[in-house]
Amino acid sequence: MSTNTTTSDDEEVDSRRGPGVLRSWFNGHVVASFDTFGRQLGMFIEVFKTLFVDIFKRRFPFGEFIRQCAFMASTSVFPTLLVAIPIGVIVSIQVSNIAGQIGATSFSGAATGLGVIRQGAPLVTSLLLAGAVGSAIAADLGSRTIRDEIDAMRVMGVNPIERLISPRLLATMVVSFLLCGFVCFVGFITGYAFNVYFQGGTPGSYTGTFASFASTSDLLFALGKAVIFGAIVAIVACDRGLSTKGGPAGVANSVNAAVVNSVLLLFTVNVILTQLFAILVPAKVV
Image (cartoon, rainbow, N blue to C red; front, side, top):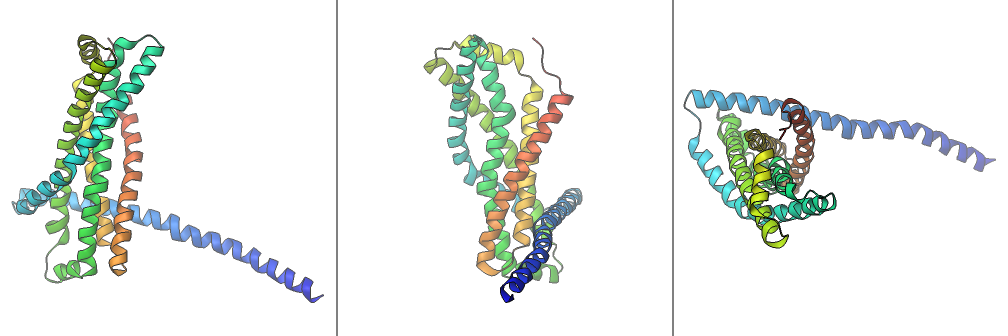
């Protein structure tokens, strides 16, 4: 009799615990995710407002901006080159194989070039910035936060957004723009060399089909996406750095969260921008 009573009590406790666990998970993950997104969106608006006002009033810290540009470029140029080359080769191999199966090998240049420019270059640039630059920004601001340097700046009347975040945001956007152009050039040249020298393609066919289907809007779209992706990486990294808690272990958690959140946002925004480009910019008819 006592065993049956104990079993029924346990089942009643489990039935009450189920909704409580679900509510706790919802508050701890879903609500926290929306809270983080709202905080980052608010920072995005505030930083851009501060950036334009500071540039207009000639109080923007250009020295810090130049230092951040030099650091980001030196950190990301060589890894970007090492990734851009295999990206061009992989796209060329896949496109040439599919084109050969359907008897359209003469169009491999257009498909390879457009694939690298429209999708490969912005994504490679943004992912490397998220891994190299975004993690460095999150670690720097996170260490400043746990040492109470950010609070000390606020006490002294210094705006951290004006002195620390806005120059990093502008530097990330500028470096992302330049790196995307660099990846476009390297990826196209790599695909051309691999197609001509290793896959039996002809130089005239490769460049001719690319020139027929590509347009200036494709390059502008890629560069614009790279600038937007750079802004996303900077905002997410700065937000995670400024919200660091828990000492040195918290800095590591902030760096990890900055990279993961940036990658998720980058792929989501890339899908939206690609769909908008396909709707607003009609395909070039030859």
